[in-house]
Length: 474
Image (cartoon, rainbow, N blue to C red):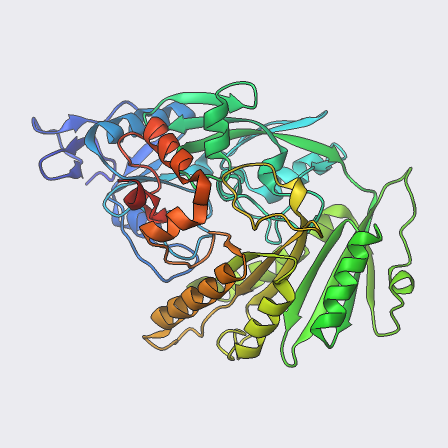
């Protein structure tokens, strides 16, 4: 029996592998439209392992036209569509129950990686793009996420946050994107062409279209990266150190990893040294730091891939099967210490990923003025000019209690309510369980613009149903 669908049966609302007079023929494709159990099962789960939603078919495109043709068919017959990269979500955001999943990783060509720009298919992994750029002495100017083997299109749909505190989000360093809209049109968009689509797609959670290709700003790669880890026993010392690193111009990257017991606050700083540039500062000396310090000098690629290697080891040992109810929120500078301190005080061993320890609690400061794209929501600007991303990326035991997922969702919603009261805004990559009313509050004054863009570029309301935004638009 063939595993490739040849048509869509509108009556039964299913794909068929046999000729039928009632079926709408599938368009001719260079890639594959799969309906076998293995392909559909793989596309039914994400990294969170909290939600399972099985699609009716999986498209593995060989070219962008494959996506456009299938989205047109899905538009005409109200078939839900979700694009998947590495499925690094935790609450079903990239799933399409009874719909079509598009495996973007089959579009993985780097068209250009030199001069002042990189031109990449959306299915390319950032780790591969970083290595290719490094071959030309370049790096992506927007900074890289902590875990780098993620798809370009995936992080550009969400925002993409790095420890480069002056860099904003990855979407702030995109010059131009190719998008397949919910009508099945292939459109290029930038600040100069199709501006509404450009604004709606970058950080837009897949609601206005599927990003299929991106032209990205690049910068010279540093000759060396100097990094320091300074362990602070208290929260106030950690915040003071991070603020001093930023205000003193002592680092290119700043973030804090918070670990039990105690907890201990591991302040990370990194300085990019260029062959013709300034030497690295004496970070411990400038901070007046007399405690222990880890100092390392490494090449750029080794530096940005360091934590990816750790997580890949976890994945080989079965980490993917752990349930991961991640919590992610942006906080204003005036309330971040209060919120983080109160949250740490009430965290349980489960929140700390005990006893296995395969999780992270992280804090990233960022210049608020560096963020420019409207779909990525942030707290209101404050005098200190900083916003902070706080992540509790915990993972369960393999034999977690049956009520674990629901209990963690309740926890996240309680924390989100407290963060919102403190002026915080959810970074919607984790396990938030947003309702229609939550999405309206999330986008605030921009909600009507979100609705207009959704109806303009996805009039059949078929794209990215797992986000839950469609239900709020209807």
